Amino acid sequence: MLFDTDLLCWFERGNKKAAQVLDETAERNISVLTRMEFLQGAKNKNHLSYMESFIAEYGFIVLPLTDNIGHRALIYVEEYALSHGLRANDAIIAATAVENNLSLCSSNIKHFKPIKDLKFRPFHV
Image (cartoon, rainbow, N blue to C red):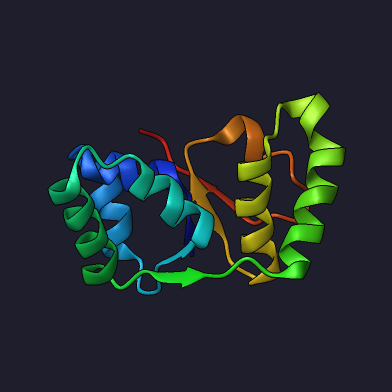
């Protein structure tokens, strides 16, 4: 399973449903973009250290950005940006899931659900 940034943020805020989803998932993956977005939310160096520890301790596999992911994300932007408001970051995360044959778990239903070749698992807060 690939997790979107929002799920990590919900977990950090103490959301029990997010914790349950993470705890019930054996293989936890995030895109390198999700890692960057998550860490970007750090309030100070101690918070950054906590966030990095969380990623490591939960055993998240950080998947790199590849040429294929970039190409697929571009296609998604062309196809879904105007009709569904898909932004570049979400396109990259969706493309990471598809290129790695993973389901994507996110509460961002509006942007991700319309993507035809994406195995989407909505997270309801």
